[in-house]
Length: 271
Image (tube, rainbow, N blue to C red; front, side):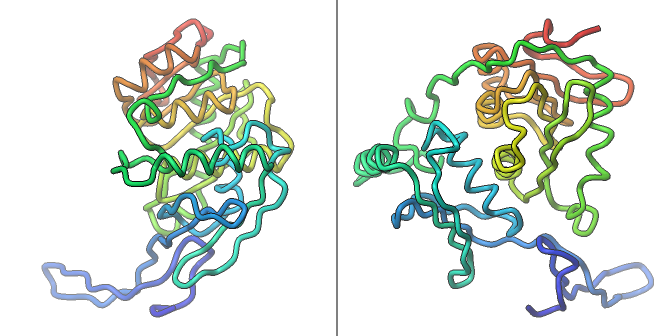
């Protein structure tokens, strides 16, 4: 690649010019890598997203589960990531009955204008009811603060380029089990979902922490992981709050060392 080798997958070096009062200064900057990633199911392309090209198999596995393309990890038989032109194809082989349902979904897309969400053909589909989290756990404020404080040291890619979001899974005492990064906050959470399945810790009691705002999709994906709480460093949206209420998910935002704000299911937050 022009501009030098990447520090690690997810970052690349590029030439830049810094303008200062003392004059221009030529620099070599580390920037976030962004590529097109196509998800191909049983030979049929379903979704293309712009993403950071690391942990793409986790991304594909997590997206497939959180978007309910399959219902169980065992219905994903194979995942293979291969270079394709200027991007990456992630090729998945899934159970036949799930593929039949996906084909039907794609058939209904023909001739329609999409609403901007991958594989979604209508407002009803975009705002489908979110299944309730199966977690019955509560989380202490101290654990949430501890998990959020532990997140920056785990952001290896962001340390280089300053441009990636992170999502992490924390145990109920605030210990981080897995951290995933991406330029897209939804992608980071899907990567986390895929990593939890691959590491064999999916279904354990815990909660999600994210370095972004909290939108409807973030709540939907956290509920699909059976999290007790989703905790964000920034603000939630109104639909995120409504969805968290419906899903039984604690929603916490503006997490700081000395305070946080609870927007949904305050009973989930232990004193």
